[in-house]
Amino acid sequence: MSVLRDKIKLVIFGTDTRGGKLFDVVLIATIFLSILMVLLDSVAEYNQKYGELFNIAELVFTALFTIEYILRIYCIRRPASYIFSFFGVIDFLALIPTYLSLILPGTQVLTVIRVLRVLRVFRVLKLVQFMGEADHLMKALLASRRKIFVFLFSVTNIVIILGSVMYLIEGEAAGFTSIPRSIYWAIVTLTTVGYGDISPMTNLGQSIAALIMIIGYSIIAIPTGIVTSEINFISKEPDKIECIVCGDKNQNDDSKFCSNCGSKLTNQK
Image (cartoon, rainbow, N blue to C red; front, top):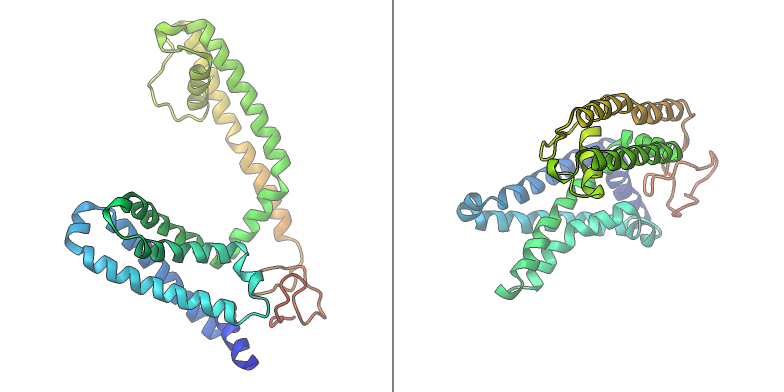
């Protein structure tokens, strides 16, 4: 039985084996198709024509994801390490909306069912586990969080000050009816979005608006540079043994089991 579990774990969690690669490809295709079906089902025209087909397809997709979820729990030593992990919660969210909509029939809960159907788009998060680069990006964001916080704090100060100044200069006649609304205008202008719902009328106000636009173009590259430098640093770090179940990469070379979730390590160097 343990041999069967190990084989199932290599296929479901592993990405280096032929079976694991094939499983990942099939699962990715299934996720994309299920999300596409959810999107098309929200279009009234398609829902009227193919509503029954969408319902049948949803049951099939849910059954496949349920089998996958059960197998993931079955093949690891500590099921709780997967169930309460990030990807375990995402897999659960991919299943529960359909089952709840079946349990809660009736016109009085149509709004609830509608919300549950929309929640099925959370399946797109299941794709995160197939993107190795996403792990590097997440580490870079965490490593640079203090610098980014300081940057956002500085930007917040800029929009508060300039928004307040514009409130004093332009006033209610130009649409700057309050300081919060003026700060909103400063944010829209600084980010170069420019909705156009509020615009300065005086020469001084337009000069400040031009200054904010220039500042906006100048600061766009700052967070990009911060994260990029961290990505370059992380990419140069030596590779470590990774647990294919929980993704923990801080395993010792001579370890046979994961120190985080207890799963057997099958990818030692």
